[in-house]
Length: 94
Image (cartoon, rainbow, N blue to C red):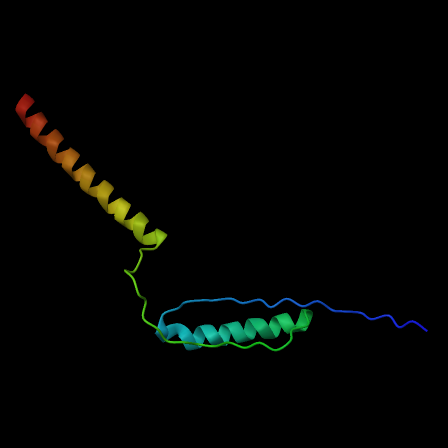
């Protein structure tokens, strides 16, 4: 008699998230709630959330919003310079 053997394949999913230390507890709480929701519709085995404190080794990079704001400030500066130049030119004509 032959016995069929079924092998189930699994995949480990690793996610790394870096947050400001003051917000870590709130983020972990929300991640745990999200995992609880996933368990309602999927079979999850083990896992957990680990937090590790560290200092960012490099220069802090600006977000896309910070770049957009900086670009807006540059445009404002350019418009003010252009306005001043037009004012001087207009006075020279008059």
